[in-house]
Image 1: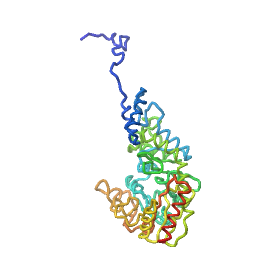
Image 2 (image 1 turned 90 degrees about the horizontal axis):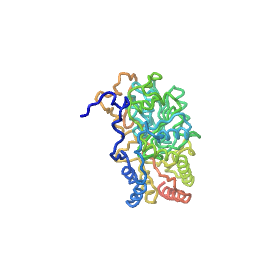
Image 3 (image 1 turned 180 degrees about the vertical axis):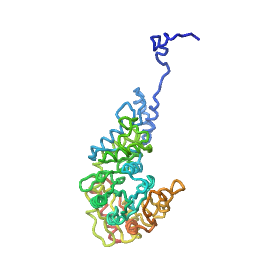
Image 4 (image 1 turned 90 degrees about the vertical axis):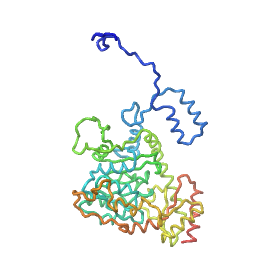
Length: 444
């Protein structure tokens, strides 16, 4: 082994040992991964082969698929900026699901042990489940004939422990936000809109999700706007935004100075990892740019169908809180009985109309509170039963039962849903209305 002195070290002016590496480096994520993504679109092997031929001609570095520390502008950041512009809000936080958006918003609003949060009995389970996840108590309220929160029942269920109300814009239909906001203001409560199923909808000219203190969006495959998985929180309250952001990224990568002391009490705490990746961010960015036009097409077709449906004694349309603001991807009627709703759905399907009834199900429906046994039976992740046994909770636990919201069960069990396509033309809409009139005239 050769002997060296300190003057031989490159740092002291000596020869540099390594001038470069001769091994051929390949990108960590390259052509094969790109083609695997292309395959999810279902392109033929021939097309995939042509794509390979084209992209192998370029020598490009591996993409940076996390939103932080990349060498290009983050797609997730671009998505957030576009959402702020589209919805006219000061803050937008992209997360990895609608459920994560709810958790982050709840924490952002300071909800925790000792608090109660009012949620509707007809919503996807996550709305209530995440209340429990942040160690608060969900109070289940009735929906009215709009299939959204009944303001009168909300008012009756407010206690000294109530911290927030969560109106849910179900099945593309907006809640009565005027009434909810008045109640919240009167009692000093936070309002967190669950807009998982109505992205692009409006209430009296204002975007759904932007009226309360915070709005939560689900941007998954199964939603009007979405990719594989994704969600978003929007707000005009900086404190809510900062706390929600802290909770969604426990490592606090997002902070202007990541390692600086907290800027105000409650900014830094132990959170989760709900960050959205660049893959989802890329797709949802494009999707969100389509949102406004999609909602307009849905709403136009929904109203085209509805205005051509006659009046019948045994079936009535759902009451709308703003028929021009509803997204309109579903048209809902109430039949006289659950049995009639099922019969109408079957007959409409036979006519070529996509229709379904929720009543009389033999399988669980996570959108109806009677199937939320985790909450009704106080089932928790750990045996001590928090938050239902939490010493910080000074209220009287709600009396959960399958019959606690009879009006909700009545409306949901009699509901007849008709799927609306944004791609129908006027003739298609008239034909759907014709089928509805045909079936209703026989049974109603």
